[in-house]
Length: 329
Image 1: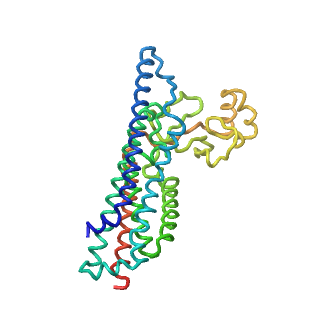
Image 2: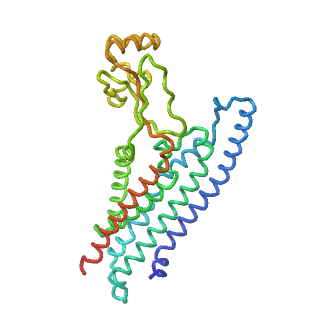
Image 3: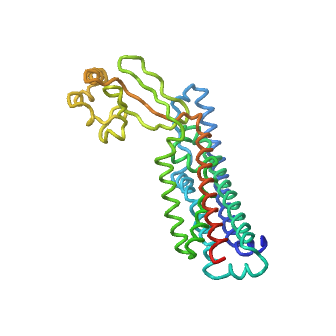
């Protein structure tokens, strides 16, 4: 059965391997150039004691865009590997032929799904490893690894995304039994789940830390390293935290829209912080706050999110098994 699965999907494997090899060569060449450029700049600024203000452009916009586009790799695996895996078998009727050749449904399903998920994890992990290595100098320079745009393409979470995407494609194919609809459903559901978890749930994996700078007191230092800024704003009357998203948009001071400050204080926003703070204090405002996830939680968040998607993938495979083993049995 393993040999048959390989014969059926070897062209997909060859194509994916070729694409991965070309990507690896590009990443290796440009990554070494960037690392050399960064080390030279770091050595130079160390000698001149100016590393605190180091500015450096690493890579090209086109290359950076290519790296960012690796975020769609898991979805592509789900669409082109997971979607047709079972749907095409049902669509063409070859599954019925296989089950009459002394191959049980459970063995047929285990081999096909097992190799597909293993391949997805391997390809997702390989792409992520290359991107993480390539991004090393950029991460060190910009302290950005915890930012959502970088978090999604580095570390171990792309492995979880890839496994989930392929499991989603497989489940969609088992339920719909049509290849093209299964591929379309995979794209839509994958994008929706990623958006919900990334935008709404990720920041709540662990309670954010909050720094409050009270008016009239010495300013507390902002977090260091590649922290993830969750929100910032004013500490209003009664100690209520008025975050930037809730306050609206427009010209802002320390992340707080001027249009949402007391009317009497708005003209003072452009006359210096002393007058503005004095006015805000008179209206019951206590200070500014910053909520964030510290850089030290990066790998904990990576592990939590990977676990979430692996569990979702396991649930989808369970649904697939129920459908395949019981339907028309």
